[in-house]
Every structure is written in C-alpha cells, then in structure tokens.
Length: 174
Ligand SMILES: CC(C)(COP(=O)(O)OP(=O)(O)OC[C@H]1O[C@@H](n2cnc3c(N)ncnc32)[C@H](O)[C@@H]1OP(=O)(O)O)[C@@H](O)C(=O)NCCC(=O)NCCS
Image 1 (cartoon, rainbow, N blue to C red):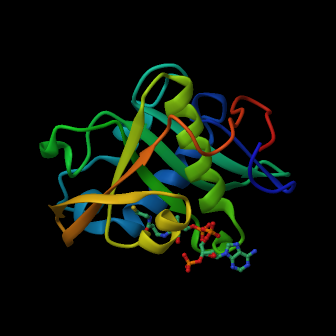
Image 2 (image 1 turned 135 degrees about the horizontal axis):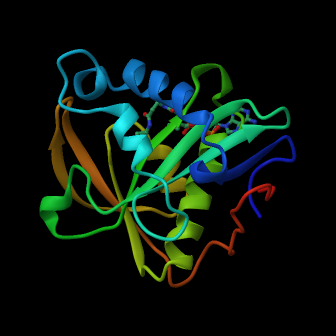
Image 3 (image 1 turned 45 degrees about the vertical axis):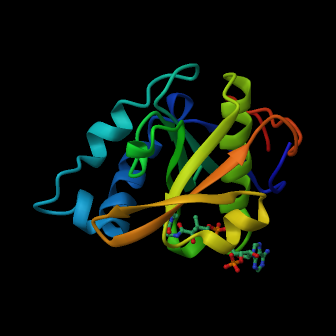
C-alpha cells in the first residue's frame, strides 16, 4: 500500500464520474494537445480506459469524500514510442489545488504496481516536468524524445525489484 490515509487510488473503471473533471484538467494542463485545435480528445482518451486488466488503463486518486485528486494512466503508446519501448506512464496529473501532498507519488507507485501485476518488466515515461520526482522514485533516464511542448526525457523504471507491491482496486486504500 502506498499513499496517504486521506486518499485512495482506484481504476477509472470504478470511478467513471471522475472522467469529466479529469478531462477538464487535461485540457487546461495540456492545451496544445487537448485544447481547441489540438489533435487530442481528452474525453475519448478517458473513455478508452475502461479496463482494469489491459491497456490503456487509468488510475484515479480520490479523497475520503470521493472528490477527484488526480490521475495516472498505463498505455502502450506515448511520446517516445518511436524508441520501441513501453508500456508508458501517461496522463500523470494532480489537480492544481491538491499538489505537494504526495498524491502524485502515490499515483506513480500505483502505476508501477499495475505494470508489475500485468507482467511488464519495466515502465517508461516521457516528461519535461516531473524529473526530480521520478528520479526520487528510482526512474532512470534512458533517452530523449520531442513533444508538442519541446524536448522531453524518457525515463525507465525497472520492475523486477524495488517498490513493494501495491494493491489497487475499487475501494482499496493506498
Ligand atoms: C507532477 C505532478 C503530478 C506531481 O504531483 P504532486 O501530487 O504534487 O506530487 P507529490 O506531492 O508526490 O510530489 C511533488 C513535490 O511535492 C513534494 N511533496 C510531497 N509531499 C509533500 C508534502 N506533504 N508537503 C510538501 N511537499 C511535498 C515532493 O517532494 C515533490 O517535490 P519536487 O517538486 O521537488 O519534485 C503535479 O505537479 C502535476 O500534475 N503537474 C502538472 C502535470 C505534469 O507535469 N505531469 C507530469 C507529466 S509527465
């Protein structure tokens, strides 16, 4: 179990009402992709995360009252897929008013646990914003890519050893 006693992490499939809030946050955070004129469709990407056992899947952090705090997805593709690796930690986002209290860290740990549960030996992310956080979680830079915002570093987290297993599921505290 990871995270804090005052929030829990579940699959989006078990908290479908979270999708509308997340879609709004995605548009605000990643305007060039999800905003007006962008190639992305936040509603469609979230709707695709209907599974708990195959990719893409999405995890949602909820507070004790069921309010959405943030998300993290595990997907087959991302910026960086041209390197021929995966799966990818994506859509890592904590609502602006909920940051710096460990929610992002718990979501990273939960996605690692999901990737391990599904049998992947490693998980990757491309980022230009969360590098110090990822390094503290044991992620290592393995390459670079480019996004609509500019250059990004590709990090890998090996899953064979390291973080303790983390249960994720409906109503499961983290
Ligand atoms: C990146 C992001 C997900 C981190 O979420 P978060 O919930 O703030 O993450 P955490 O609270 O676990 O850690 C963030 C920082 O707060 C610090 N922190 C954690 N718990 C804390 C607490 N209780 N009190 C104060 N600081 C704390 C961490 O040390 C970390 O420090 P850093 O800024 O030097 O890395 C969030 O900032 C975000 O959504 N950013 C916009 C989207 C984005 O950039 N996503 C990543 C794309 S790859």
